[in-house]
Image (tube, rainbow, N blue to C red; front, side):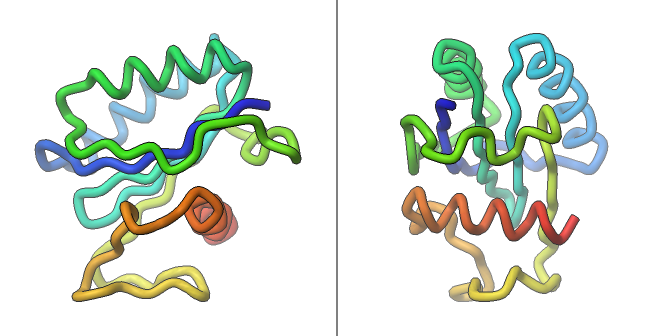
Length: 135
C-alpha cells in the first residue's frame, strides 16, 4: 500500500460548509479510485494521509498540490506502508481541532498553535491515528 502524508496551510479561510463540500467531493473521488485516508484541520492548516495504489495516490496528491486553496505544501512521507491500509475503513476520515480543544495525548501546541510542518512522517501518522480514535 502506497502512502503520501502531507501538510499545508489554507490559502483562504475555510468555513464549516466549505470543509463539508470539500470532503463530499474528495470522498466521492476517493471511492472511485480506491483511495482512503484521514484529514485533520487545525488553525488553518491541513494534515492528510492518502493511501492506496501508488498511481491513484500520486494522481490524487498531484491534483491536491495544484489546488490554489493550498499554500506551503510539504510532503512528510511518501512511500510504501509496511502495514497495509491504515485508514481503510473510510474514503476520507476527518477531524477538526478547534483552537481551545484538547489534543491527543503526547502532542502539544507551541505558541498556541500546532505546527504540522515540524512533524516527520512517523509523528504525522501517529497524530492522524490518534485523531481517528477520538472521532
